[in-house]
Image (cartoon, rainbow, N blue to C red; front, side, top):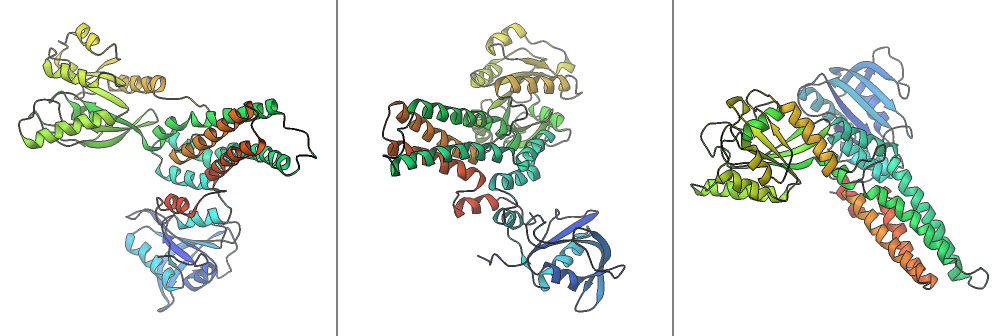
Length: 459
């Protein structure tokens, strides 16, 4: 359902459930009226903007007190949305927070849609589209490093780089269009200098594109699969890495029949670890499906933990697992060292093509920290593009930047061949449009809707 953009909206801004504090946010022209209707200040004075005051939330129909709260008024335009915003900080019990929201809705607000507060901030010029996406990344961050990258984007670092590059291209496009409109009044285009300037813009875009894979890792986690034959301790390893009993562990082979996915924080890097069924010759249809699922997860994963029982010799199933993982980015985990190490490590090294090997006991925790450190270093050196203080981009940004680069490469090629100016301007304009989509300067409503639908209602 489409609502008017000037409606006053309200929503619970904190997670549902029991907590010390719950926040109800109201934004729009009627926010001050709702505050005056529902809130009685303890000292009886008027509420100044951007000051948190103590008082009581009142049901205007009965004049009964609903909760002891703190309230804050943020007058337009100095607020998150750019509109008048009121926030009620009440006790965090679910019935209380829901009652406060219900009173705000009864007093003239409507329930906010997903991401509508941030959408209004974008539409009112408080944030650009890349910064709005950073808000979602910050909320969903699974590690401190991931949150740090989101903050950099929220500060506008990505937007500033892209806008700077785009501004330079706009100036170049204006030069071309002037040559097209006034060919007799201006000197001919210096193609060599023009191509050189395009090359500088392409280099700036390449720097951002180089962070795409690393950005994906920190945003959604590195897809990592644990594979091995039955009863080598895959589920025990997952539980130990998580620090909780997530997967069922039993001596009976074939306990895990479906993939179990959890996110593990490894030195600030999130790994989306998938525990799979043991790879062997299945004895029933359910186990057959589990083994097939394990193979599919292995094919789709970016990184693999191959678990081998260190207390036994390699057998045909171990070799089949290693063969299946051949060619993948992987490390070997020799589990059950608490039972003694009997495996032929020279043979194992040949079969694993020299992949790093770590000896652990998922039961006692021995070697687990060394495994985490080794996995982190391996991913950094094989799957990760270091980027220092630079920003990182998401999939949408990558697609926009890739289109911009392709257009600039075409324009550069045309310039190198001294093609007509109007021919070059077509590709240059395409690059300007693609870069404009990153920060939302030139983007369709469909794209905007898709981005904000990923937000929660209170944001």
